[in-house]
Length: 112
Image (tube, rainbow, N blue to C red; front, top):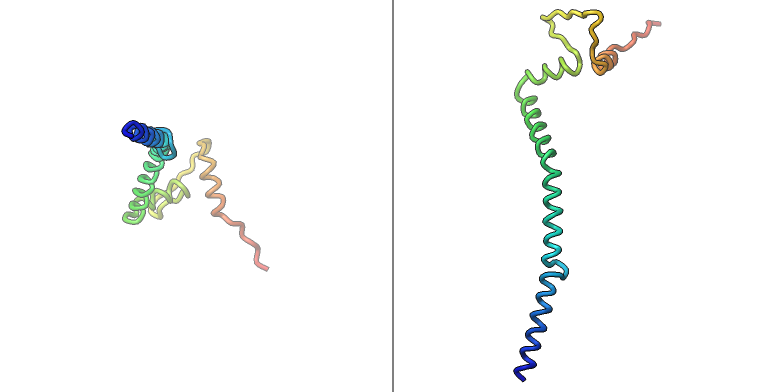
């Protein structure tokens, strides 16, 4: 009787060990999930940095006019009213700015 009890308990122990190490949700699956988490964390690092830069820019735009002025100057080529703009022939300007500035000027239709 005692021999069958020991064999039964060893069989149950072996079944539980199999489930722990090789079964669904066991140690092997845990290792796979940990690897996937590490890969995703590495992919999230640049996104977190980008989000921090965007949050800082949003706060700057909400609180100060300096950032708005800087964006207007660099993106749209705007000049303040108390400044003078000098265009030097032969100096190349960025084509992106040319496209933006060209879009601001709309052709006038003749009056009818």
